[in-house]
Image (cartoon, rainbow, N blue to C red; front, side):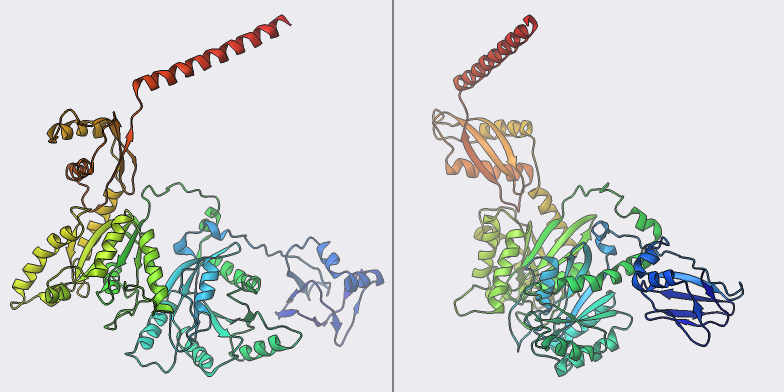
Length: 608
């Protein structure tokens, strides 16, 4: 029997004591040592050995499954202590089933060139953010958003620009710092990156002060990046950790975003924080639904991929901010301000749309190296991925040069058509042509641009042209309507019966040079969409000429309203009737032989 005398105070290593008038609540870890102060405790010899040498077994024998045990010592009940275990079960959360909008947000912050974009790419498992070693320049200037996949954890991660305390308010660095400050309002956690190779720099201390001022209420974790060469034997890891600890944000985490070293430690540090946030924010009913609900309302409409492309300083980023109605990306009078291609998701008219703001399109030369060369490659990559391409032109340059498109813009438009993408032309900065003095120029630009575009790009007829002023927010609804209309045409599927009825009418009104040599089209069908692709099955030796294919393409676009998208028509040889009869007879003979074999097998089985 254990006996605990009155007026007994108990303390333990790693123990926390909460006292009240009549009772004491003590929370102890699995291993705790009891000491007596003043009076003493009496234990049996066997129980004392069990407590000291097998503490885990003694606690687990009481049915305690959690890491922490809670019990009460009642002083009024004859000073007899009785342990009452109160397990604290934690609900397991499947982050993969939580809606993206409800996931916790983690922002990556630090001075320039500490590896923020490299860690962002490591977390989202894609090389999406530009990474280049530029100590004296900033590669990342806009806020990039993505969904991190760290083990079974899922959370939204934001890549921010490098912070500098000496940046003036009107400069590019001052504007990027203001954008980072706005992002902190919708973030719950922050990863403060420092360079473990260079050690703690004065700029890191400035970033720490900036975080204490602007990131109040946000849990901040210090991450020592580029720590793959540090070890405990030489003491370099402990020295770097000691420096990072002086920032005042707790124990640092050593990792390497380039090699993946230390991602397990980051996972262990983030998991309890993310779980506590989800349990605190989401209601119990929502937590119970997580993992049990299936994708009942799977989106019938696939997300639309829209890429905004054009030459530098034509207003692409301003147009994106006007469509989203928020300052999502950095804008300014400087040419080439956007370097990273920023991808933003939003909803328009009940449809999910992925909007990509690309860097200014320039012809890549051998002299261009570094971040600008990477920006050009990234812009071309997003042009290939897009469903609809919005080509932005400058109205002021059109009026000055008296031509709608320059060489680079013609290259963009033709490449989009060759890749089979929908095309929408947006003429921006129309507000600069308003007024009595520019009225004639304004009307001439509106009339001349569609005609010249049709002349430059004859492969696609009926390309929609929208005249907007992104700075004033005029025309953004018209742009989105044309984009959605072009996308629906791009995804259109026509039934074969309707196409063949259309074909008979078209072939009757087409003027053939030689009626005897007229190709005979057996039937006409659509084999794929995105973009619409058709196949004409022709019988005989005569094939459709290029003129005939252009006539069919033009008739398709006019009769089915397929302007602004590329339409492809291929021709194949239709099988002859004799070949079809031969194939059918061979199939029938093979089926008869099989039935005979089956009958003989059954017969032989019955005889046995």
